[in-house]
Image (tube, rainbow, N blue to C red; front, side, top):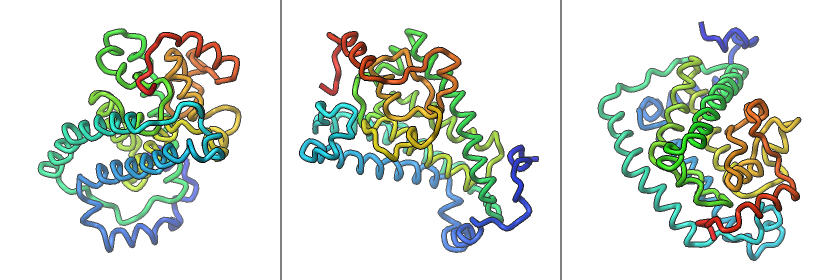
Length: 286
């Protein structure tokens, strides 16, 4: 039995998602069953988000109200930054992601689609469950790739070439890091026996969060401002991680960093301390 179903008190009623699911099955079943579909929605979501954030980056220097929300208003994103990060993103997708997607399309059978949609409760609990599992997995992965020098130099140092991240730095990563994140994002919904709609929702949510974490903005509607008690990381904490790499390893919540002694909440005094410690370190974004 699906473990999430035990917590779903509305499982015996028709889901509010059923009409939308029926429409998708009736009009787009072939596309949904294709092994390429998860890749398409992932890449499309990422490109849409980084396009929006990059437009904000280009507008911010001449728009003081927008620039005031930047974590580093005195460090504008340049065209050189954009092209450098965009080149590596395109390279990783063309050389690694695209061939893997074509391989799935050629050799993996079409995905069977259930007739029933998940209930809204099951959908939300499924995404939350995947978040909790992924948070633990990536915290350990991230911690190891900082604590083991060979792993850091070989696979993760590239991502830390930018001390003040912006949205395109999200996938300014080695192929191993990109594949690792994609693997857990794909496997966790299978481990929790989630509905495919839930799995796709988790995939899109993960991309949205990772892009927001790197965006370089602290908006009033950012998730870390909406989730109470400091439970959520958010852009300020991940920005601090890029400048102080021994802190804030978890991708979503803060509890593993609390328990591991790696949690750091950025403050003006801590920022000054970090800046002093970074003197002489080259920032590729400079």
